[in-house]
Each structure stands twice: as C-alpha cells, then as structure tokens.
Amino acid sequence: MSTLSAALSASASALNAERTRIEVAVSNMANAESTRGPDGKPYRRRDVVLAAQPENSFDAAMNKTGAVGVRVAGVVEDQSEFKRRYDPSHPDADEGGFVAMPNVDAPEEMVDMLSAARAYQANLTAIGLIRDMVQKALELAR
Image (cartoon, rainbow, N blue to C red; front, top):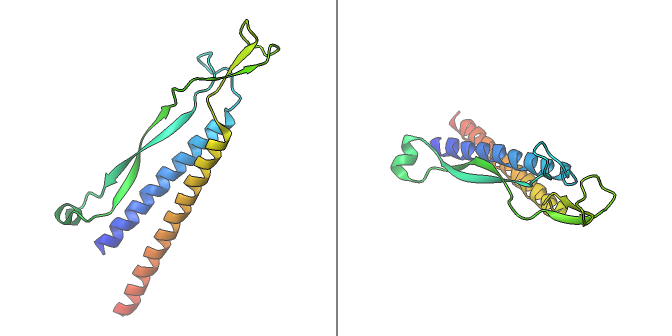
C-alpha cells in the first residue's frame, strides 16, 4: 500500500503546484495593462519555479522507487524588457509619447493557464484511479 500512498502524495503535491501556476497566470493577466505599481514601474510578469520533492519514506529510501512529488520552489519576476506603446495622452507617457507596458503576453498566459488546468485535471484523475484501486483491493480482501 505504501507505493499507492506515495503515488497519492505525489498527485496531491502536483494539485497544489498547478493551483499556484493558475493563480500566478491569472495575476499576470489581471495586471497586463498596469503601467504603475507600488514602485512606480509597470507590473512585471511572474513565473512559478517548480522543484522535485522526493517521498520521505523508508521504502522510498531503500528501493529508490518511491513516487516523486513536486513543490513550488518560488515565484520569480520575468526580467525581460517592458513593452512600449505609443500613447502621448497617457499619464505615464515619457517625453517621446511612449508608455512602458508590462512584459505580459496574453496568449502565453492563456497557454500557461490551460496547461496548468490540464495537469490539475490529470492529477485529479490519477487520485481517482488510486482510490478505485484501493477500494477494489479492499473488496477482494473480504
């Protein structure tokens, strides 16, 4: 049962990681037009950094076959250049009439959200399959 437990734990950790990816993508989309933040600069796109999280069980340490989960190692700001848009009437326009816009690309954010949503759904399905397997094993044991 420990291998099923490890698989369940790995899928559960992935649910948390994918939820974070969706939240960050939504935040990026919401701020795609924010030209001034608390620091006076445009919003900077954020990205989630994921890292492997091995199972911490005796079986996994001995067999080296335990499921590997995932954890959010951090959320970092994308340091790419801000976009520039010509809009001389904008309050944040420079002397040339250009406004520094966030480095958020809406299609890229949509792809990230869809990817995270699909991974979330796949892990929910895996958890359901594991639950069904455990249930069948318990029925056979009766």
